[in-house]
Image (cartoon, rainbow, N blue to C red; front, top):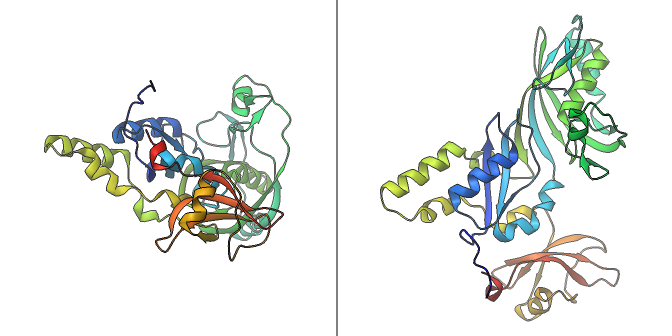
Length: 316
C-alpha cells in the first residue's frame, strides 16, 4: 500500500516577498507549512541579507522550476563605498577600509563597463559547488578553491543615487549573475572598495511585481480563515499563479488530445508549426490550450517531451 504523503496536492506558483535576515529555504518551509502543501521548491536562492521576489513552486510546478533558474532577474542594490568585506555584503567582516575620492563622472564611467556580456568569477560565498561541496562552506573554513569564470550579461544598469559613500543602482541581468560580485568589482575599479548593504530582487522572468505577498500576509490570511471556520485553501489558493507561468517565456506548440496521450507517455510525436531544432517549447492541448509540459524539437523535427504533467490518475 502506498504511503500517504502529508499535505495537500496543490499545483501552482506563489510569488513571495522574502524578508531580510532569513534564508530562502527557511522562507520556503514557512510558506509550505502555511499552504499545507505536499511538495514545494523555490527557484533560485536569495542571500539572507536580500529581500524580494522568490517564486515558490507547488506540486507539478516544481518540475518546471529549473526554467525559472535560467531566466533573467532584476535587482535594486545599495552599495557602500570605502569598505570591502569578506562576503562582499554587510553580513561579512570588514577586511579593508579606504578613502572615497570619487565623483559622479568617474562612477558612471566605471558602471558603464559592466553593461553587455562579460566574464564574472563567482564569489567564494556563493552556493555553487566544487567537488560536491558549496563554495560558501569552504569560505567559512577559510579555504579558497579555484572558480571558473562564467559569461554573464548585464542588459541594463541605471544609477539611481550617488550620495557621499552610497551608490544605489537598478540592474537587469542574465542568469547566474552575482550582484555582490559586481559591487565588489566596482569598488576595486573606483579604488576605494565597496560592499552591498541592501539588495532587493524586483523581478524574475516576467512575473508581476504587484502579485508578491509577504509571509506575514499569508499567515494573517491563514489565521483569519481558521478564526472564521473557512477552509484555508479556498482563500490561499486564489493567490497561486498557474503552473505554466514558470515557462511562460517559451514558444508554444499546440497539439491534439490524441497526440497528447503519446507525449504524456514520454514519446516523441509529429506536430505542426514547430520552431527550429533544439528549441525548448511549452506544450499545450486543444482549443483550450491546456498546459501539459515542456519539450524540445529533436534532430528529426519531432516534438520530444522533456518534462510532462502527471496524468489525473497518477496524482496522489
